[in-house]
Length: 465
Ligand code: HEM
Image 1 (cartoon, rainbow, N blue to C red):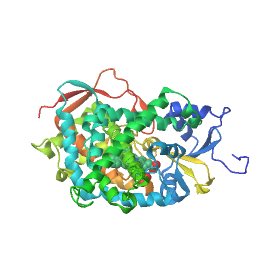
Image 2: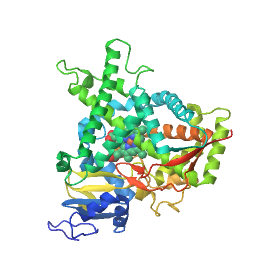
Image 3: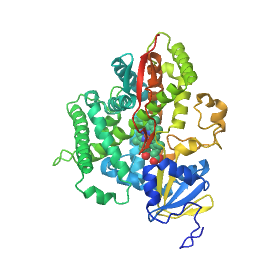
């Protein structure tokens, strides 16, 4: 199709009402993208005046995330999320992003992950110790509290447990705000005297005060000499690395929350949000899938019973032996990728396939649709952990499976997430079976992450082991 400025657009839907497609997208984004994917591997449509390109082929996704990643910045929605996340790792660009990534990386080093493993197990057991045989629970809520507590303790050195439920509510309010931030009139809506705006401001204020409390605690430890060195074994977590860095550590005497504190706050808030919701969704969908696939569930039990022996939870040494457990997680985040889509905005013209994507356009890529594409996955709708054999892993084109994104903006927490997921699945499966409560509705809520719309009410049954 030829556009008014002689730009050749890829095929795509054309709507008479400029906002109708966008409003549909807000209601059911996955269905809308699925319809659009029928136009080809690159399609084009408009959200109001905004040109959007949907990339639905692994090679084009690689072009956007890796080869030409310098041509793109984060999408408009994430730019607006800066109101909450400031300019932390997820939302910053260019040099600031590169510097922050370099600085933060050691918090995810293999040696640190070994230390985190023990903390993860402790918190998982604390959760399951509170369960009673035949309880019916919303396991999504349980996992949200668990993963939040884990990320706080491992990376921020803070035990949040008693406040986890309350904090979970504030986090949900912020995530809903991110979703609304994508609306065309978001800036106007935000100024109206709506109760949702008051809730958002309150949630942000509460979370800010918790985060400043965590930061101040650690600063005091430094000032009192309790913390010896940022890379000491017991204290090389994210917050100590940030505090020890020259760029972050200078304190402005006139204000207790100086610019440097603000940068610190932004990164702590980023890890707080990016580091737990995705994993909570992954665990929720995993136990849902297991409840629907008894053969695979039995096979998982066989593996954890034999690898763990008399133990109730895995150690670092056990993790490589939990091969089937890992396949289950791999398959679960194929079918229900917690980050179900990623977006970018072009800052320079960029050629992808045979089309030039002009600066200012938005591009979208969807893990959910790519992971269910029958060109790459046999029987894509089927939960089949065994598909993840060596042959599949070698032959799959890169970016037909990309739950953690990729390139310089790929997930920094990926190694952390694999360990946390495998340990949680193995520890829970060793002691418990989860059965979906009869009649509980299952639907997707595709906000910034892929949540179960109605939570996940499951009966938890103690295993006889
Ligand atoms: C199953 C779990 C997880 C999934 C599916 C996931 C997915 C992703 C994806 C797709 C991105 C890239 C977004 C983009 O390209 O726009 C990302 C980035 C990021 N993730 Fe994760 N994530 C998970 C767990 C974690 C954990 C546990 C942490 C931290 C403890 C974390 C921290 C981050 C951060 C800070 C970024 C931004 C990286 C950057 O821009 O340099 N994530 N994640």
